[in-house]
Image 1 (cartoon, protein in one colour):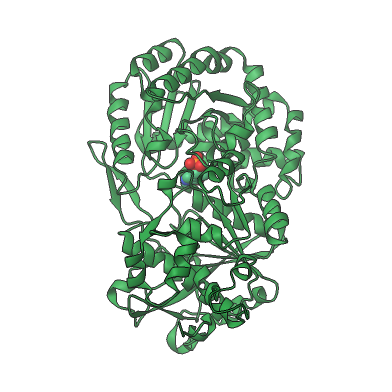
Image 2 (tube, rainbow, N blue to C red; image 1 turned 60 degrees about the vertical axis):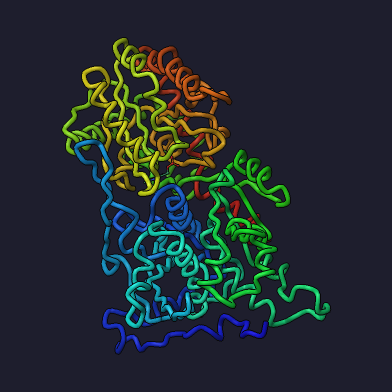
Length: 593
Ligand SMILES: *Cc1c(COP(=O)(O)O)cnc(C)c1O
């Protein structure tokens, strides 16, 4: 296949004069300070920079955002690449029947980002598609800056259809999604080159970014080895040395796969198809497999998830880097003030939170009352429901999808009401369902129905439009953070970690990070899972037993013990499951190897 192998050759760097073409553009000078020191690029389809920028959907995007924030704290030079997602993921409203209504979630990039005067061109489906980056910068506590590039195809010269390709996060059909993956992977890589970055390590956060390897493969042929005509011309070890891959998906069906016909239609001649099939799957294009096969370092996001991934991909060497959260972002100001006064360096070095056991019971209890009161006021405002500040408050908020079992708590509403008649508790729920996730949407409708049924017995409120702002309020203000995934589906999960940083106690199925973090009765509680038919019913019974016999009595009759558990939660979970620890691990094991 005789074809120009160099991505650089197909790239049009800085094609437009900033003054002429981009009245609001800034000189590429904005990127200058980053070029010499930055040799690592992190690619993610979604990335939660701030709540006003609707460039995220759930845990994957929050993880990417927290990773960027940790880079700013630890002064690790990484450039991040994501999509502009002008219409966001979705804005959720709930109609009278409890059905999710999905609206565009538009945001204005000009408020938070600068448009860079650079453009690259991709050939997709026989058309030239221009991709332009926007830049936003995260600043660390000492001023260290981390650049985030957001890719945009709403550019003059693109067809109407192509202009919408960077609108909707996870929107559209398979064709739209594969085009987005082409833009993220190939577009992102070429934008970095056009801006002048010299990247040595490409970190792909999930398979959405894997197509960047196509350019790397093509480049690797520029120095072909004299190894005979029958050997692949691509220098695969050379590509692998440049790539790091993190997988988040715990089941085979979760891995995006495309027909090769679609791929050939969108990217004809991009790559030797036989070679691609040997890397990405014989019958269908599996982007996870492609990323894994072309990365020297591959990891799952918890120890258990790494083990599950090894069973799914037995030929791969899978490391484990357990996810963490950015402590300064997820700690409520009331707790942050307490930590500032006792552990001055906790933001940069969250390990010191291990000394939380030295705090007085009254200190953590009082802080939590502040965060709880604030949450209850917000719930009142949003829903009209007045929660009882004295009553145990249970929170469940995350993407609404079947494997997270949002209805498990309501498996036996009779038992639930009976429990609440003995010792009061109230439940707050939130979460969006993907527009095509029927089960997730049905769960939202059913929760509303059940909340009406339980009215007067158990207060249940569903808050619409779960986002970063709601997450902050909820993880800080709930007494108990509930998670009921079907193992091993929760690759890691992170919201329970956020709760722990604020003295929240986790009550969860032992899956993902909690399988590592839980010390039964010390920093939270488990919900035993049993395999087999009717497992939901049995797991729910275990959950009710834990509430009845352990959690509710502890809350109402052993305040001292509860406070001690809050401190253990901060000390054990908050000191270890942090994005700083996670990033140091990536830096030592994946970036610097
Ligand atoms: C932390 C967070 C998540 C991830 O929560 P999980 O418990 O890991 O599912 C999702 N959405 C938002 C807004 C978050 O802040």
